Image 1 (cartoon, one colour):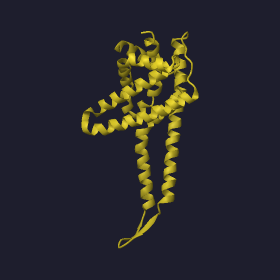
Image 2 (cartoon, one colour):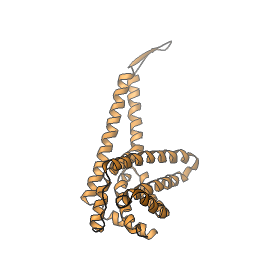
Image 3 (cartoon, one colour):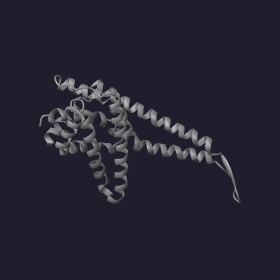
Image 4 (cartoon, helix red, strand yellow):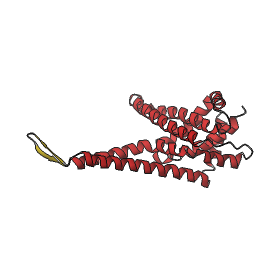
Length: 231
């Protein structure tokens, strides 16, 4: 089991300099930065328009600087949110282009077994599901880590490992199989996929390294599917 996982992982890692991989990576990062920046600007202008620069309070008198304080609060909140949301947002955007990663892997390593790309609607649905579930799972792990102390990161890795293993394998499998067959194959190898997903999830704790995970994960699970499809 572990041997198959590491073979798939290192095969994917060896192709990370492929221009097709890099294009998907930069698209995901660029779209994520653009979305978060646009959201930050919208909040900033909203605060500027809704909160007055000064208010007059009984006894205290005029209190100024409220707009500046609110703006600073928005900037700090967006900075914190960006750290938390960058990886799931980048993963969601990258998922729109992960068929390009799978095409590159199969073209390089499995030229006679290339799959069919998912439709735009399927890819968009997968992206939305991946983003929402990653956010929910990360929030759950964050909440539970308050009670688990040093074991919190292990819970984060385990939950996200289950999620990434499930989603990335289905993305790879559905290029070749109907949805029900892809799910049956996933259930048959659930333990292997969970371990492989945990290998992907551990670097999510590292903000910059985590940005590479969608591409590396898609490539790794494409290799895993090809190795497990007939077992």
